[in-house]
Length: 592
Image 1: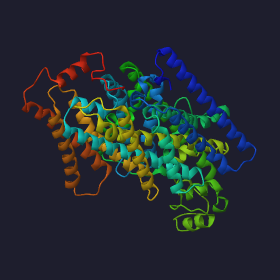
Image 2: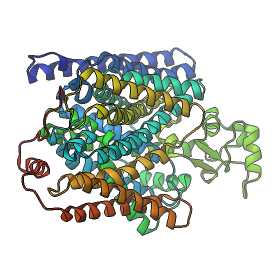
Image 3: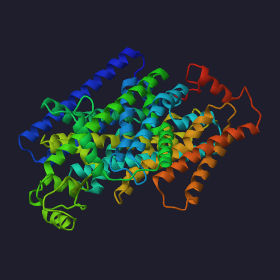
C-alpha cells in the first residue's frame, strides 16, 4: 500500500511492509488458536476442519482487495518495492503449487525421482538465472520483454497466444486444486466450491494485480509452512522421533519409505525418458512466467537474486518437512490398521477411502459392508487388515498426520488451508499472465508505448474477469487433472518461451528470426507426437518438448546469419546492456 505514496524512502517502506506482515501473522495465529479452542470445547469436526480454509480464503481475499491499484506501476510491478525475502516466499508458494499435484502417484511412465530432479533444476534455473536476468532488463513480464526486444507484430501475436495458453493452463490447474480442497474440507458441492474459489482468486488479483498476487502468495507460503510444521512441532514436543535420516530415526525412515513405495505404486520410467523428463521440466519451469512473477516486483537485480535464493531455501525446507510428515503419517497409519478387523475400521479411514485417498483391498469402500465385500474377493485375505491391503496416496499422507496422531480436527483444517491457498495464488498468477499478455499487451505496441494507463488497466482487468469466470464455468461442469494442465503449461513454456529467451541474448537475432524459431519449435514438437504412433505418455511429451526447444533455438540462431549483422541495432544495444550494463535496459514503460 505504500507504493502509491511518493516521498517514502526505502527504510520507511520496509518498516511499513514488516509491520503489515507482523499484523497479518498475529491475526492468523489468533484465528488458528480460536479454531483449536472450538475443537477443544466439542464443536463439530466438519465445522472446525472447514474453518481453516475459510480463514485462509478470507485473508487472501482481504489482502488482494486492500491492495487495489490505480497506477500501472502498482498493478504490473507492485511498485518495485517487494523485499527479496518476501518475493522468495511468494515464489516458494507458486513453486509448491506447481509441484503439489505430482505428490500423488507419479504418472505412468515417470518416476518420482525424475520429477523431483527436474523440478529442482528448473526452480534453480528460474530463481538464480532467469529471474534476476529478467529483472535486470526492467521488464515487468516476459511478454513485455519480448515486445521490446523483438518489435515484430507476427512474433508479438505468437508470443501473446503462447503466454496466454500457458497462463490459462496454470490458472485452471490452481483453481482445480483449490476447488478440490474446498470440496474435501467443507460440505459444499463441486459447483459451489468452484465459484467460491474463483471469487477469491478475482479478489486477490483483479483489484491490485501483481501487488495482490505477490502479497497473497507470501501469505499462502506462511499458511503452507504452518500447516506442515505444526504437526511436526507437536511430535517433537511429545518426545517422538521424526522419521528422517538426520537427525531423526533412520530405521523408521527406511521402513516408511518402503511402505510408501508399496502404497503409491506407479511405474518407473526408462533411463532415456527420465533424462527427457528432467530436461523438459527444467526448461519449462525456468521460463515459466507465472513462477517468475514475484521477482519482477523487487527493487533491483540484486534483490531479485536474493529473493530467488530465498525461494530455493524455502522450497527445500518445505520439501524436507513434507517428507517428514509423509513418513510419520505412513508409520502412524500402518500401526493403526495392521491386524484390524473389518468390523473395527475407524470412521476416518472409511471417509478417506470414500474420497479416493485410501484404497482398501483395491477398492474405495465408504462403509464396512462395502469393505467386507471388496476384501472377500481379495486373494489370501484372512479377515484382518495387512499393510499390503491398503493403497494410500501421497496427498493423504501429507494431510492426514494430525488425524492419525489424534491431534484434533483443527490441524487437518490448517493443512488443507495451506494446500488451498497455494492453489488460489497459482490460479491468480496464471490468469494474471494471460491478462497481461492479451489485455495490457494489446495497448503497449512498439509504435504506441505510452497508451493511456486507464485503458490498459481496464483491458487487463476485463481479461482477468473473463478468464476467471470462463474457467469457473468450465470447472463447475467437468473435472480436470491439474497434473495434465501443468504438464501442458511446462511443455509450451519449454518449446516457445525458453528458446526465445535464449535468442534475446543473441545480438544478431531479430523479430523475424524469433518468429521462425517459434513456428519451428511448435511444428517439430507436434510432429514428434504425431509420428510416434503411440498413446500420449509423459515420456513422449517430454521428448517432444526437448526436441521442440532444440529445433527452435538452432533454427533461430541459424537464420540470424542470413541477414547482415548491425552492431548499432537495438538488439546489439540490448545484449550489451544485459551483459555489461547496470540494468533497466528497456525504455521505461509509462508508470512501470
